[in-house]
Image (cartoon, rainbow, N blue to C red):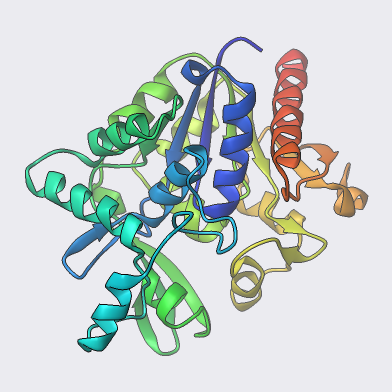
Length: 314
């Protein structure tokens, strides 16, 4: 494989595979497009959780114990905010805070999120292109029995406890895909990889942008998704709970159906090998649980090998 790879991802799970891809591909051959539906303004600061998770992960800065935020973090800001009676439901570490302050300053000065994200990545020594899905604001809204909730209120403040009745992406229909996303889709690609991020919360916002679903479905490069479900459970986050509340079976087959019309291939975990041959797309069975660096690079190699096989078949 000598061409370009486009990876679509959200936060923690997607960042793990993005890291694996970055370790086996030359940097100029990888573009990572990141969900921004989780972005929100808090304490006057523009916070981009998935962008920061991917940036910290690929930059070797992530807090592996918490699974989010910076390593070696301190919390004096939060302690003082709590003393003053400020909202403390969303933790902002002292190192992490600098990212949000500088991003907000530059956004207010008129810089697009794409340029700021690329600059932060470069300053952290990251070679592959890190690209927000859009420079416009898109907000993931969770519809619950308790009313509509902004994503971070549902996910962090309320700890995913409200039952979900629906999801919508405010502003998506009027948002422009970012220049980096458009350029990647127009160029030659060896593979388009949908990372094992939450399909409903992390990937669907990207697919809701005008023209993106059609561009992916019509692209000559194989589109491959990695299952976020292993043995009827989600590796990380509320995917399984969400699927149940939306009336879906918590299986990898439901994920394939959700991405219907987009996929050329689907990567199953070995625990779900019984589904191979029973799905509507070609499958590849391997270990998808990424606990170590070797797991991440191993899965990345498996995905790219699968892409080569699908291109050859085409």
